[in-house]
Each structure stands twice: as structure tokens, then as C-alpha cells.
Image (cartoon, rainbow over all chains, first blue to last red):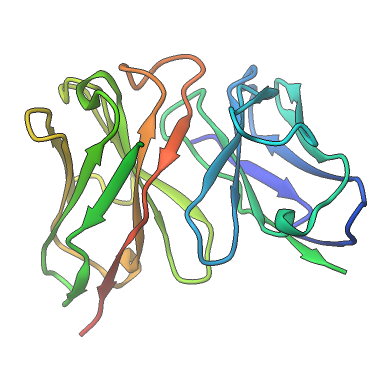
Length: 107
Length: 124
């Protein structure tokens, strides 16, 4: 199975900050990398597909980059509603594994 | 409006069985692959199972292979997960999620929309 490793596991930041979350795959997954947001007590929501595709309705402050094994999710200016847990997922090879999550907290 | 309503969770003893359902509406159900993803209490997301739009092709995580069976009834717009030989570590919220394509093994596949989950607790 392809292992997905996110860093950091947790992150404290302030409203207005620019933050980047990283995700590394144990082997090349080309651009088959998706990002999801899960707010406390809520269902996960798709943010970014195929490494950099912005899902409809997602604010443009979210962006994705990378290919092969290394990927990033960047939030350009944090808003209060962005404090949540973020997961990457590879869809290159079944099982479509998730990273362990990055908990983004308010500083 | 797209909706996925999961049900069937509850408390079951180790070794027991449960059948989860997910009722879909707001899109042409038969045209899309579907998925089950679970989340143990306080833990991250774990992909469990998926199947193609026809239901012919099915896929499982190693942790559930041979114990869980995914299926769908396209005439009733419903996804199922039959869970047998339940173990303590199957305790989780189970989410159903809509894929973005008919075929599961499709380049660029992602989980486009998630329903609310149903809680499964396995305990004696």
C-alpha cells in the first residue's frame, strides 16, 4: 500500500497568516492527490483534487501544488472558518490511502 | 440538492453483524462509483471500500477484506455495507461518499461529496 505522510501533524497559526501543509507519498502518485477539510464535528469536504484543482465553491485562498511524491496545501490568508483538520489522499493505487491529518489550530 | 443519508449503525458485540445503508438523492446514482470511509473516535480517515457505478467491480481495504461486503441497488439509489465478524477496532463513524466517476480505477478519482456518518460501536 502507498503510505501518505503529512507534516506537520499539528499547527498553530493566526487569522491572516499564510500556512502550508505538506504531504509525502511513499512512491510516485503522479498528480493523483486530493485534499479534504474536516471542521470539528462535521463531515469531510473536498477542497483540492488532482493536486491543484480547486473544487467548486472553495475559496481561492486555498491552493494545491506538487507532483510525484511531494505535495503542498497552502492557505494564503487564514480565516476563522479555516481552523480544522486537513487530510491528503492518494487516488493513484487502490487502497486509496489518507494521510494521518494535520490539525490547524488558532494561536 | 445532493444528499447522502447513512443509517444502520449501532452497538454490536464482537463477532456480530451490521448492515449499513446510504440513501442517495440529487444526482444520477447509477452513474457514479461510491465509497465507504470510516473514522475511529479521535482518529483520522480510513478508506474502507468502494465499487463502480454498476456494482460489478468492488474494492476493499485489507483490514476488512473477507468480512465486509459492499453493494448497491441502483433501482433504489442505495449503497450498502454488510459488516460481518465485527471486531473492536471496527468501532468508528462510517461515511458514505460519492466518487466523481463511473469507474473506480479512474485517473483523477476523488471523493466529491460526503454524507453524514453513522456510528458503529463494537463492544461486549
